Structures are given as structure tokens and as C-alpha cells.
Image (cartoon, rainbow, N blue to C red; front, side):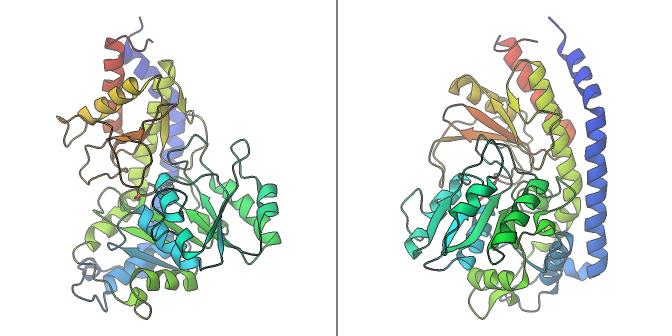
Length: 414
Ligand SMILES: *Cc1c(COP(=O)(O)O)cnc(C)c1O
């Protein structure tokens, strides 16, 4: 039997040129964020925050300007009052769609929690469906956006085209910014009035360009994923066309008040610093994902994407033969976490998800998947989604220990 440490040395040698590419991208994105800080002239007092109504919260307004500048958007809403990615996307969709309109997802079925927002799953209470908003879905064709089918499916009611960049908990490839560009240009050539919304969760700073740069009208994401850089303790963002972001502000707070109010309390310092750190932290997660991918592949396991495939998000999928193996792998990742390592995760119900979910998340910030986490719904084909990692070293240690355990128990061989 080959020695595991020997195998790891080989894996890292193979990955060296790919790591160089990731470092290059991090450099470019770091420059983009730094230049945005300079353009908006961030000062020390911007980091302080406000209380009460939060009127004249210049730090909050300047942070939103930094996001807008970085993502090449006209405006942005970046708030601790947006509690998660699902909330950010919900605010965006509820603002864009009115009774009688239809929403069309063109990347197949969306992320689990959004099915309840739309009204496909769950009680339907306060869903888009309850407000008389129709839902259309065009599946991917061999992993790609089926533009022809989309153009055929558009009806006079269709108002918003939604694209989910990351595969989320689905067995499909993630959609690169190039692919998003091609789809948007073809769709807008025929239907220029359609609004294109992109769920950008897990995608920020993985590529050189973001979806607004290729024609998306509005994007949204979570600050406990990429753009929070592991430091933001809460928050979500929406960025895009000014009139649409204004609507989102009205939806988030109240008509007439919109973006003008909303105290940032003590959240700004970490939101700024996290955004500044994000390109680097994303690069660490990506290196960890490549390591996970190649090491497990060399252990004869199935994992996607391959280490040499182009990436647009942080997610690495690992397949197991049974629920037991899947659970054990997640438990190994938990055991290598900095926090709660001595607790062992079990599958359980999670609000917004149809199946029981197992979640290894020994994170500093609860459920933050920019930190190393492994999770997945307990359903065939028993896929675990491994993502995040504040440092490459941590991902390497955790995945190596998980592999060691599987080797010791004879579950895999090298
Ligand atoms: C995580 C995620 C969401 C939802 O974000 P939460 O913060 O978990 O609510 C939506 N879409 C995609 C693609 C995601 O990865």
C-alpha cells in the first residue's frame, strides 16, 4: 500500500500550476477591492456604525458604494438586517415581481430554501405563489443553459429570468460567468425588457468578473459566505441597477424609507474588513477544494468538479455509497474543526429543506460556509458538499484526517 504522505506530496505537486492561477485571480480581485476602498475614500470613522434609525450612517452608505464599485453595479444594499442569502434573494424577487408576473429559473430547480419562497414546496404562506406570481422553470440541457428552450418558454407574463450560478445542493455543474454572459446576451437580444437576476451565492471573487459585468440587472448573496471574508457575523447584499436596488430597499425596510435608514450597530468594521479579506479567503477555500478533489480522486472516490476543471464557486461534491459513509465523512470534518470539534453532527430537520440534512460546521460564525463545512441532504446519491476554509492548511488537515479514518476502516484504498 502506498503511503498517504507520499500521495499528498504528489497531489500538491500536481496542483502547483493550478494554485498559481488561483493566486493570480486573488491578486486581481484584491486590487479591485482595494481600488474601490480608495475611490470611495474609506476613512476610520466609516467603520464605527450607528444606532437607532441609522439616519446619516455614512459608513453603511460607503460600504454599499464599495460593493457597488467592486461589482460594477450602479448601487448596492449591504445590511446586517438581511439575515441570510435566502433573505437577500427573497427581498430581490419580492421587489421585482408583482401579482400577474412570472418568474423563470433557467438553471433548473433552484436552491432548496427558495422552493418555499417561490411556493413550490412548503406551506405556501407568504410565498410568491400566494401573491399570484407564476413560476416557470427551464432545466439545464447537459449541464448548460438551454437558451432555445428559454426563448420558447417566455410568455407575456414572464418578467424576471433567474440564474443560479452555484449548483447548491444539486447534481449539476455550476454556471460560469462566461456562460451567464452568453445566455444573457442571447435572451436580451430577443427580450430586452426582461430583468435578469443572478443568485451569486458562493460565486464572489472566484472568477475575475461578476455577473453584473456581463449584463445581469441584479445580484444577491450572503455575507456569511464569500464576501464576508469569514469576519462578517451576519448580513446579505443585493447589487445592480439603481432603480431596482431602490425597490429592494423599500421592500426591506418600508416604502419611502428604503435605504435611508437601518442602523448598522457594530457590524461595519467586520463587514469592511471581511470584504477586504474576501479575495484571499476565497483563494484559500479554492485551493482546499482542489486538494479535496484530487486527493479523493486518487483514493478512487467520486468527486466533482475535477481539480483541472474551470470553477465559478467554492463547492466540491463528494459522493458516497451509503448514508453511513456520508455521515462518517461529515463527522471527520467536524472533528477537525476549530470549534465544537468534540461534538458529532447527526442528520436532522432544517427549516427550508425537504430532506434531513447533515451539517458539519465547527465554525466561528454559526453555519458560515466560507469556513470549512461539509453538508448535504440525506438522500440518494449521498452527496456531501464540501466548501469553504479560512486557510488552505486547515482544509488540508481536515481532509487528510478524514481520508486517514476511511483508510483505517478499510472503506477506501490507495
Ligand atoms: C447558500 C445558498 C443560498 C442560500 O443562502 P443562505 O444564506 O443559506 O440562506 C442560496 N443559493 C445558493 C446557490 C446558495 O449556495
